[in-house]
Length: 118
Image (cartoon, rainbow, N blue to C red; front, side):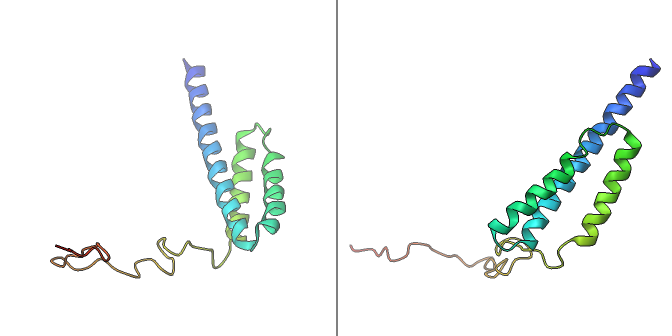
């Protein structure tokens, strides 16, 4: 029974580590796109980032993995872009809520030139 509990905790910890690595990789990849203005500059950086992650995928020791994740998160936070790109219509973008919703009681009719020709 004890080995079953320990294997369950091992699997749970490995699953949590895999999730942290996945999230870290996605954040770092998106942040790499913030630093590279054009796609032809982005692809080599993305390949280098992938190589860093792939080179450590066969590490099995849980403590080593935790330490590597913590180091990678610290490095990511240190080198994060100070002014990341935000899609203009997304929250934080330059067009977000540029045209706020009208107050209640005002009705907008979108028929754009469809006049009644009776």
